[in-house]
Image (cartoon, rainbow, N blue to C red; front, side, top):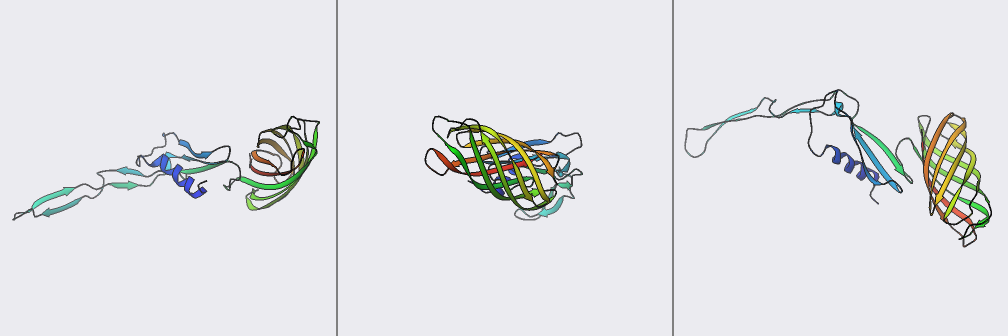
Length: 233
């Protein structure tokens, strides 16, 4: 998997690699151009054309000289040079990230372990109850730092490869403690999460994300690990 800096560079080059153009306030934003896999990790870049520099290929002072080609007299040479004016808009690159364990600003990466009982089976079984503890890193309330979370929830399908249910719990964040509630669906090893912050420094707000679900005990599975990428909206 390529690193975040490399993906950002690739995405930026994909947008501006065709050459710098003159930007005006009427130009529409270009992008987003995405690099990666949204089910695993990706970076999307959008360019604001009003922030790009404007280039006039012949607007510079020019290069003037007299070049000898063989014997005198010399041959006058006049070569135009470009002029560059800075854009007046906002910064040109807006980065949005998706997928599992994305370190981009605005996202929270969590990793943890949980227990689920009476246990997941290959064909599905009775409704399940689970607990999950996870720690991670991210941004909250304009501050960056560690997240420590504890959740409890229910799974209504009870299969190793399929799941759906709800969870609730709390997290200590860089801006304080928050309470959350969410619903999820799980297909094979990928769980899609959607929820809201019901109390604390980020309330009221919502969040979405994706989690990588990995059983860590034989069937009936009673232990699992989870790696999540959440984005607060």
